[in-house]
Image (cartoon, rainbow, N blue to C red):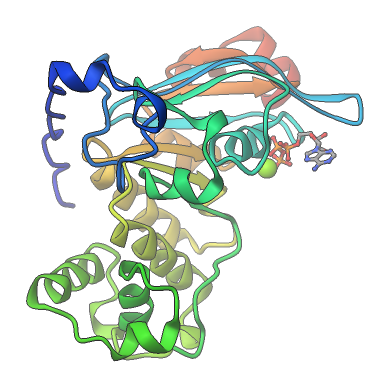
Length: 284
Ligand SMILES: Nc1ncnc2c1ncn2[C@@H]1O[C@H](COP(=O)(O)OP(=O)(O)OP(=O)(O)O)[C@@H](O)[C@H]1O
Ligand SMILES: [Mg+2]
């Protein structure tokens, strides 16, 4: 396995930046998370988040912090609010109250879904959504382009640097030998890896992964664990998963959600020994 790279230091901002106002103060003027201000070492801060659906409280005063470069696993029973939390982070669901910051300055509750994605938060849903008729390489090529027209994007010539980046990602997701295969012919697991590769093309600082190993073979699950460990530090990862064996392999820090709140947090061993966690989730 590749050793995880040393965390990239984020340049401190110029003092003049700190005084920013309007769009810049909430970071909307920034592109792709470059210069994300996370000097306090926290990439994501959720504080007192409340979300209700027709009176049903899906998230209740949820507070959670993720450190820069951290690989955090989120576990908890069905309906605990894990996916809803990701919906809040990505702007799909607006909280009734509470704050959500990406780095120190980007107020996620004031940004659109597109702005959030462009600022450096990548999300992977459970079902892979690759372009089946296009090759693996072309899928990565499209993910890199900002022009959303498929035909225009594929017609535009790639420069050397862009090709190198695609090769790098192909090797990271172990699909070098399948580069010319139509994505529709890949296994379920390989499609998942391709989709992770497509996210990586955008170079996100924070990756949200909802039940990434569901439906994977043991070998694919094992590779996913290696992949996530190699991505941590350079990226921050929030991984929701029910597969405890997988969580045990990757997590150094686990958050247990229950009824829209943090029930416990700590090492997997610590939360596994927590009576309340055993009661509501792990069973006896
Ligand atoms: N759009 C919605 N409208 C109404 N209720 C919703 C909506 N989205 C989620 N809920 C409810 O909010 C609660 C939390 O759901 P959520 O999907 O976040 O749970 P989860 O922790 O991801 O569960 P699972 O492990 O099953 O994926 C559930 O009771 C769910 O039914
Ligand atoms: Mg869910």
